[in-house]
Image (cartoon, rainbow, N blue to C red):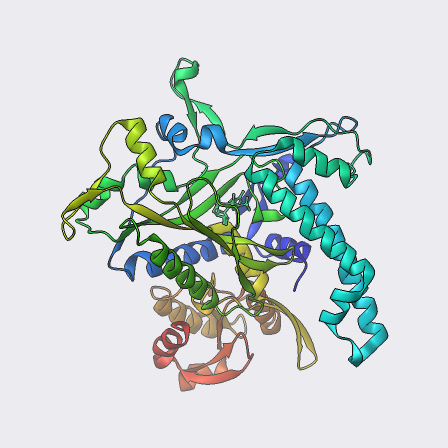
Length: 501
Ligand code: ATP
């Protein structure tokens, strides 16, 4: 798969993503979406919304405010428990996430294993047997055992909130600060990830608000409003797309981890006791959705959580193989009735539901699907980025799923001559109300095709001299680069059919 740095420079060059505040030297972990980026992002949102809300009779949407009553974050547990474990190096004064330092160290062991495997593959050729090698080679066995035992201790200490144990692991592994190169660490401390802000003229404690770190709570506090106004019976879901904010200290890896990002979440309210059935349903359904994107490099896997958060009775991540390895793309969580019960306790308002079929009231259980829009965007770019040589020509092409492509159709007059550009403009005007269209007359046709490939445009229409007399154009397919003559009158129908995959 492509390296991340190639994706980053491609995004900048072709107007997908720019570093935020760039002319002021940028602002860490914040990014701006450019002309083609915003189109792709909007298409991803629409596609998710369509599959969640439009295609499910029992799911409706909302758009709740970013600012919410501060007690919401007390009830949800974010004030007390939404923390990262941080550690400082005393020499460099740099701050790190303790768990990430350990994970990075484990990654080094993994790389050592990969190197050994590569060496052995070369040496033994076709006789090489991976599973035998992994279970018998002494160094590989040693590294694997280390990874397993440290991973277990890491997840236990995170689960049990044991900051001392995290420090112990860092000392045992003799992890050095990447800047100072020393092992002179402070103790591990907790750091809350929520951003604070003030409202009103008086800057006192009572005017303190938080920027929401997830969109889910906006759904929980509106549960009865939505249920009553949309006249929904359980089971039903509420979906929302919106910004979330987290003061991530280790915010590297481009748009994978940002301080300001967008989430697409759906909370599905179910009868107590039926949550695991629905959890399994959404787990499969979301995985199918990702796979249906049919990316060129689309490797997904489930990561079932062994250590569950106190409010969950089942949880997993859908991981995607990014250039930085398999990482979380979406979380599916069975959150029990924790959130609604907490809000009922804190707000002193009843949040129970009367089930007309069972003739009883209860606080519904919730199954959540939560995907980061920006991470999904990154997965689609990484999974679509192809460098290939076709007919002795090299090209970079984004094989983005056609229905998501920022531009669906580019209309290109072969030459910058009035009769060709006029004809091409007519075609452009006819198509632009149905498709996202782009008109371009500058540069040679070859260069324009390359540019559209790099943006991921599935179809190019070329208007040439013959078009004037025969009313046909050349339709070029992005993936196959095949060109065919098509009557102008049939363009709309053909493109519609081919985009609607
Ligand atoms: P991670 O372990 O990577 O920090 P998380 O488990 O905290 O993620 P959730 O709270 O489950 O993430 O959030 C749901 C989804 O929101 C994630 O699967 C991810 O796609 C997205 N997300 C979370 N944090 C960020 C971030 N800082 N930048 C971009 N997307 C994010």
